Image 1: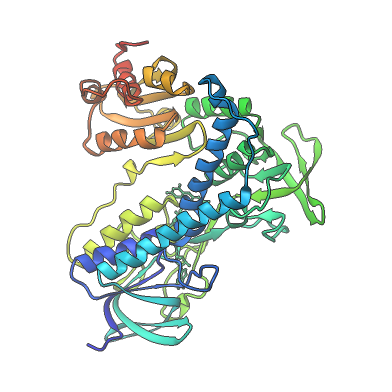
Image 2: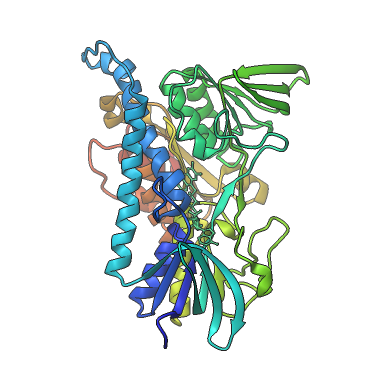
Length: 476
Ligand SMILES: Cc1cc2nc3c(=O)[nH]c(=O)nc-3n(C[C@H](O)[C@H](O)[C@H](O)COP(=O)(O)OP(=O)(O)OC[C@H]3O[C@@H](n4cnc5c(N)ncnc54)[C@H](O)[C@@H]3O)c2cc1C
């Protein structure tokens, strides 16, 4: 076998691709990973959208802006006086860039540790041969490598608004939204999905007046209705102006910012003038430059690579995972698929349970859920019981000074099996794991209700909501 012949070649080094490469190497394969992302100096920046312009930098900015908001508002309640509070945006962005770099470097270290060969450049299919698939790597040097198995993990890109492309100055994608050099006085968001709400929260906390324009008539339609209503109440109180059922018309970017024409839910024409606009209306699977036609790799009408339940594509020994295929566009879903595919290549029974993938929105309050919503259960006609518990009645939440929200359990009416758990409130991004574990083990609500939870902890709200399914909360 020559140096350029690999058992497994992974195209894309985001959370799906780099994790697939590591798992394949752990299983004894000779593995290469190709990734084209460049840092500011032109060097490699492993970790994909998630690490460079997604999960990680957004959470770094959410943390900084939350500290700022606490210092400006919440500290006073604790008797802490802050005078001369200010924000150094350049320093905040530099900290965020440093957090990103630590993650980039961490993956380089992991590749070395696991002996994954890394190629910096764009990978594209050339042809199928007896040895596998030939892949061209176009980077500083052009080279050709061959893989017996190929795992495509090329991710996704932000969807632009028709007629108003991203200029990353005034009309921002998630990328530009993470690099705004000064707090905009007025900021608009088109799209009230996860990414929009998180980025809007960052800049609102730092002082922007934020207006959200959402085409759908309901707020956070994928979220349990009761939880979405509770979250909207909190966002309204914070001053986030959320307009639902709008129809966006002409969007013009000029010297002084952006003007947005739209029709509101009543059908009345409106105009909004803002300094910056963040467009977050979904993401498009990315196969740019992959040259799938050369080998006949099948894509669907959305441009996603067609795969079956096991991530097998239309071609033998070619697999695809993460944002470039069907399913939720989440980093942990991509990672799970990466591990499962590596194990399937090794002849094992890799497994991804789509029913227990958690969702989190890292606003404040945070929103997190797993399993089915109440509206889904109603639509399917399944008989269920519901139990809720408010953080208002939780001792730790009171001590923290953050009593917004609740935990909600949905369980089968006959068997008590947990069908969904929905949360809005403090640190629910962490609390949701218990519900995921419970559902993975097919636990009943009573199982959680009978488990000892530390006191005082936010997790007691989870136990109490499980007790509420049987109408026997102890503290409410
Ligand atoms: C602002 C924002 C916040 C987010 N927050 C969260 C969150 O909190 N939690 C969460 O779970 N998800 C979050 N996501 C979604 C998450 O980032 C994606 O679901 C995840 O990154 C998908 O992983 P992936 O490996 O499929 O693709 P990606 O992360 O997109 O990685 C693909 C990689 O492949 C490379 N590539 C593409 N084509 C080629 C080629 N031909 N040759 C070589 N390299 C190529 C790209 O440069 C990139 O490095 C967020 C996304 C955004 C935009």
